[in-house]
Image (cartoon, rainbow, N blue to C red; front, top):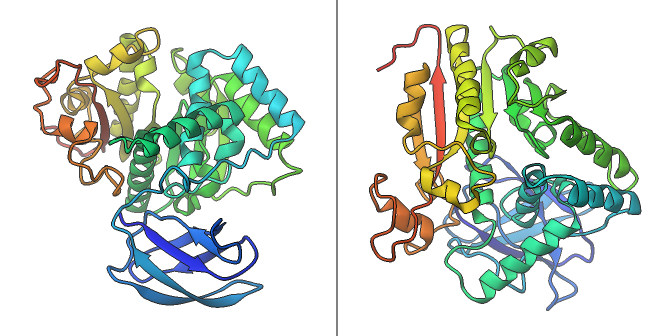
Length: 397
């Protein structure tokens, strides 16, 4: 991934759509440059850009002009220029987040922590609703960690794994939907505070189903309602969105999905992002087998992240299911084509992990069978990003 630096001399904050050569439409944010109050500074984007400095014209409804793009070779903002959270919350929103912090368990709270990651990596992940769903506590906590990491020139910046995971899932989702001709079903199990139905253009012909605990989905709706006065009502980019209150650990989750309009015979992308390792082994295998069985009815794509055994030691009270070899497990359940990536691989890097000595790149250099690092004996904690597919006419090797 390339980043860019640019400046432009206007005295107002605004955003504008650009269409660069060799890239899709890209939303650009301009933030005030403290060293020059009459200019604005944009940090970075994650789409392909030209390899040399170029000048582009732009136009909004109010202003127009030119800007110069200069490549920065993957450099991240330093601790002083890292995008700050807005924290423009109403009292109603603060009270709702107080309920989350006081009444929810750590598994449910992880939905807000994930949203904080998207919000604070806004220079690569565009999610206007992320700060609303994250809440001040998680935003401030992660922001302080990021500042400390950048100040100390840490090889891995806090939240980078969330940013890479988000970008990986979205790129694979877009490719899968496109391969289906656009009119797919998309099911997010353990959807949490996911916002893709509001921001991904690739879903404009897709029916989206979000499944999670009743209190999580209710809070999500309530936060949106409470924020209506300060933000415009979020417009769906998906064709439709249905939220199904269910505990996917229960055996009847698939029946509830069907009762909400899901059609098993229609091409489907299943997303299990940050969820499968919270389940017990029998529960996780049941969910995966239900999805795999759908391959017998229609073209199916599964996008999921798996922890290896050592990763579950990071929080033994929360993490239960693991697979050291998900690329072997999924074919045994009925998927015909499985592709596995590790954080830092060419399709799971996005220019954010260029340091060859960071944790993720060091792990990639070791055989997956090694459980502890030979240099210092620390556990080899891996996160696998897995795409699996199947169809009624598949041949499983």
